[in-house]
Length: 118
Image (cartoon, rainbow, N blue to C red; front, side, top):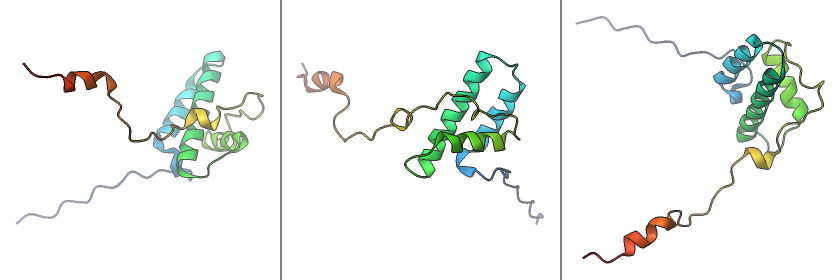
């Protein structure tokens, strides 16, 4: 009846660090357009902290900041170098959410549900 349509190509990520996702590259490219200053430094550290969180979600339980700084430098084509600065990234316990037990979370609504209907 009709010809079969061509298959849609899947987007290919050029990054060898797939666990960071494609949005990291967009964020890095955007940060490189900003002018130098405190705001750009804060953005770069926010990106690095996000990269650390992504790394920890898919890889080991711990990661050195130097590895994240190296990956950030590679993804930016060597234009971002945070390893020369003395600031450190957030600690692991602040980046990852703790798993909660299956307890009741909606205590404020409990009395309403147990109230007798008139």
